[in-house]
Length: 375
Image 1 (tube, rainbow, N blue to C red):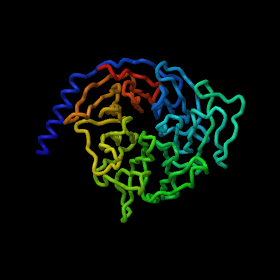
Image 2 (image 1 turned 135 degrees about the horizontal axis):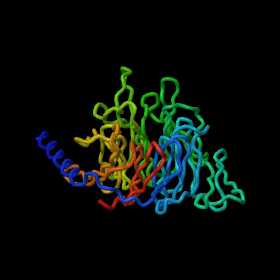
Image 3 (image 1 turned 90 degrees about the vertical axis):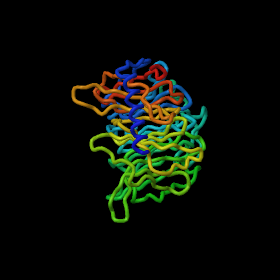
Image 4 (image 1 turned 90 degrees about the horizontal axis):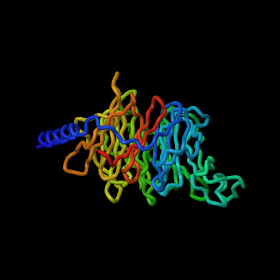
């Protein structure tokens, strides 16, 4: 029975690939100007704005409909560290960016008359010349991690916009922490994953009432061996799932993790295998992941309505391809495969409505916005 299901899945995948092979994407805008390649992407869930992060530590905000540049922000402290993750709070007002140097959170839509001082928690007046970020000025930093430089550091703001989850190395130990933005939100907390979990990728669910954060990485067992797994923090006790079933990261390739904009799926990509979990209404994700059969990906991103975009693994002399897979039916189904002009697609992101797919290039620093409604 298991062999029959696997065969059926392969038939769906091969048939879908044949229909969509070498389709040409409809490019609605190009975002140009990054140096160091594009390493992270995130759409604002409330307004048509996209954040892009590059290999030299620069974060930019763009108008997603026109491709116009809104503002530039330097996230890494000191500058020069690759941005490994970008994330928005569910209400779209907070943007986080992490690199090996820092985890920074900006209030991109600050109040008209006051912000809260991150040290005292007290409100303070904005300078008279402060403008809304959509007028072209970088905005106040409301949270900044200062735990030092570490290659394993990675983090994100929670969907409810109250905390930032991050990891930071301490010798051979890795601590997964949650930290608040100011004293008015309570004290910093450490999770039960202290010294036991090393994350490669992190993602927060886009839910304004949830602090759920998933981390894809390795968990250390009692015998000090390490196994790939998924850690879940922010909903009561932290827990690790999929131990022994999650695929390990592929050496030299990025690991990626993303919740679908509608919150119904969670995808992890090892740089080769693509794994996924359904997310129930309770958000209590459990069990082992399913793995997309007969498909590999350099990076992947979840979209709404059970769709996921996969970037092909780079091959010498060949251009990258982007494949869209639909999981809403009984079996996975390839609905489109697009050719690109890039040697390597390093980052992908769907808009909240699924109508736009952002495709980041790690060689020339260009992001293309595709019309994802076209096939």
